[in-house]
Image (tube, rainbow, N blue to C red; front, side, top):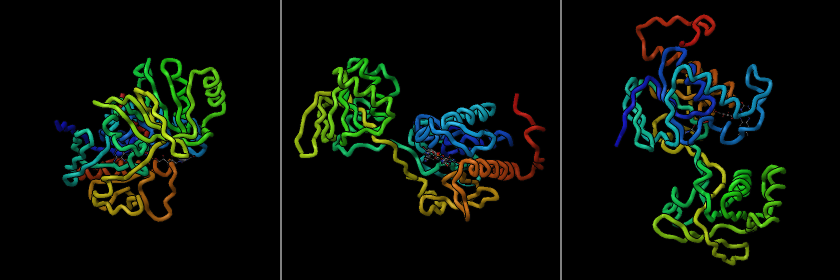
Length: 335
Ligand SMILES: Cc1cc2nc3c(=O)[nH]c(=O)nc-3n(C[C@H](O)[C@H](O)[C@H](O)COP(=O)(O)OP(=O)(O)OC[C@H]3O[C@@H](n4cnc5c(N)ncnc54)[C@H](O)[C@@H]3O)c2cc1C
């Protein structure tokens, strides 16, 4: 069923700049719906470096990526943005003041303007190149753990060599039988996690398979029963398993946005920096995806672009109203 929701502005991308755009639109009286392919807000800050300190956010001498997102979410909250997560914006139709954005979950947002804050594109998991992977996705094959308890008592293969693979192997070894598979002998994870991992391997609580890679999945009706691994010499080993957790990092892809007639070149959308307007009336772009001469790809730059876009959209939607610019100190926030 195609659900239709109405709003003033559809924002594509809930990264730091999309979140600040939500606030900036709220400040000029515009309601927003925000779409993101990820199942959480925060874009690169939460997906790639939640625990790294950022030093060039105005007024924060130092703030962790994840904490910046918490602050931006709180700042936008008084304007009650509606978030549509775990879905990609895939289709555009309509015209200025009557745009429609449809998501991969068949949700349609009818809006007067669109702000594209899509960074480098929709994030998604890097998937292992296994023939029948799709048959098992969501039932036996997962790329993230939402509810740890769902895996209680299972035989789990965890594949990957970074923090996610190591941390989940440690965490799930308490409640499940865990085999950790990596194509190298070394893991790229925090030293403290590696110490715990090796202690659990030594105690027989985690089985380690290195250097091995995934070769095939066996099973039926969406449920795997074995995972075939192969070593670097091409020897195969069938390991009994109910679940495969694959942690191979995130990829990003502009995907359908390239077909929206916005003159995308080399993954960027050209804009007029005075308004963040793209070549299509009523469609604006801000943050990493927006480009113009001498553009600096910084969060602070994206924030300023978001404020420019919000004011331009206000003027587009209400062309006959005089809009008196006011400082937030004068105007305040909604009660
Ligand atoms: C390790 C690292 C350190 C960094 N340190 C700094 C720093 O110190 N200072 C600084 O200023 N910058 C830093 N950056 C850069 C900064 O993170 C980016 O400039 C910023 O995240 C851009 O924000 P954004 O909102 O434009 O895009 P993003 O953060 O990339 O967010 C875009 C969001 O849009 C979503 N999306 C894209 N396409 C679609 C679609 N079609 N449908 C639905 N959702 C979609 C994506 O899933 C994503 O969540 C760093 C980056 C990295 C990787």
